[in-house]
Length: 117
Image 1 (cartoon, rainbow, N blue to C red):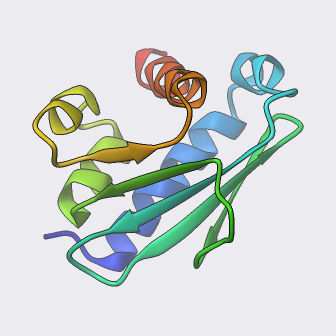
Image 2: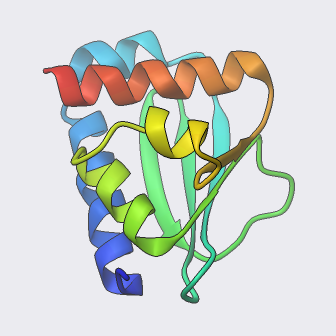
């Protein structure tokens, strides 16, 4: 089980990787979204806000997210550190992503760009 701090660190690491990738920032400058990330086994809720190609992380919940990512703490930390891809946890039901198919696909692409570079 990962702690709230470990989840936060993994999300901050992902946020930094996104914001340090000029190509990703440029590709997503017109894709403004709010993503809610919730752990199921520890009290840990975070919100990402992507606006004009800049990703910001904050603790706490937001109303009306475009995407919601829900999983156990260990899976969340592993995914956002890039230790595992979201495919297996998604397929076995450990990871739930709620949103439109287009938004989910875009988020998958962002993850692949961060881990692949």
